[in-house]
Length: 397
Image: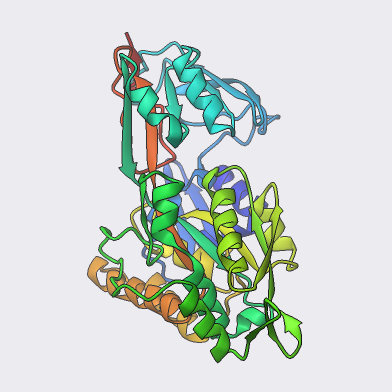
């Protein structure tokens, strides 16, 4: 376990920042870990897929990782297929399943068709347009649940135009959240006003803010822009945005297109640029203004992960380039606070700061949708967590 954690720390700056480990000592079956600073949520941060315990003595860790779960990896083709077989000596009891095959396909329609044709037993995130036809099929069950995920509009605060809060407010006002939920997700989601799902204890609540083209124009006029010859401009320079998006989340390119269309109505040109791996691109390049991005904000039921990763200067997902001393101080205090009620107050303060200063905009909380053969699959649980799908209790008739 010591060697596995040390490997994770060595390979990832993000893990270093998340765990804040100073040293690790192993004494028989006891592991002593010392953090660099008081860090009450350390145990929670260990429940992170990137910190999964693996056998580092395995020569080919990438293709033949040895972990601690109920299945053993048989084969792995990146972006294509993952094959598992049962591990008989699993500590919590061997699975009833002999094997499991994961097939990856970014095409939501293809995933739905695979279930209809009988190729697969369970489909994660089927195409929303196909849900009605799936539910009409005998033996197919469709389930949905709210998740800890938010689709957001990330703003590059290092771009001159977006350093003006009124421009950021205009961007936020242009996002028609309810229309996106209704037309793109067909109601399988809810508009977002903060990064956190409203049912979480640290999620702030706000009065509904004014949105729409007229409100966006008002903010842009306060920023010194005016509409001339059909273009929103300032000092003779038209306002333009480069908007990044990616197809791994099928909703995001559609959200980008809706925003592009609405921005055009007020004379703002938006160039949509498709990228493959958003984390790598946004971390390495600053030639963009906005990005549709999807993030788990409380995957372990706590706000600390998202706030540290997204808004702390050392955060691995701080793509906006936020470096706000007041916000950093709140997050640092949160990191050293033990009580859940006190943590909730600080998390809400941080979320309020992000809201008031419009550091990123929050579009919607998508539902997790799963369709499966209920006459065949036993003990499947559709959870808010997106990490744990295949358990030792899962079975088929």
